[in-house]
Length: 185
Image (cartoon, rainbow, N blue to C red; front, top):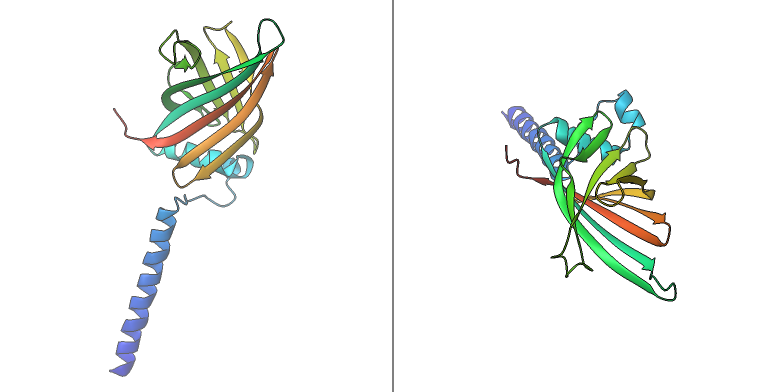
């Protein structure tokens, strides 16, 4: 009878340990990654996690902000402005996430975010361990800029991608915030 009780206690203890480990993994958002997976080996692990969420019917929201500092027209002074926009993030292919539609960017120097907006499209490439962000300025010369010094971060609330571009007479620092959102469809 004592041996049976010990076995039951050990079994319960083992079951509780496994349950705690599973709960901890869910709490920390650790995703199952197949060992020796070619996509996992080549891809940045944080980007892989974002792609995993999209592939498993999670909806991701992209919030973009930028801070620009540029020379004024008389070249003696500097001025700055901030932009902001939001759009859903979708999968383009196995290595690319993109904004679902053009992001309507609002600017601090245009009637305190209430003035004219521009449209920008965002693509995040993660085919290698290095992340690349391309931004198409659709209504501002229809040109594409590529961020430099791109970093990707994850914390308990979401994901952040930062980078900068120096373009002529200005430098712009971008921050892309990505988080899970309620799926509307």
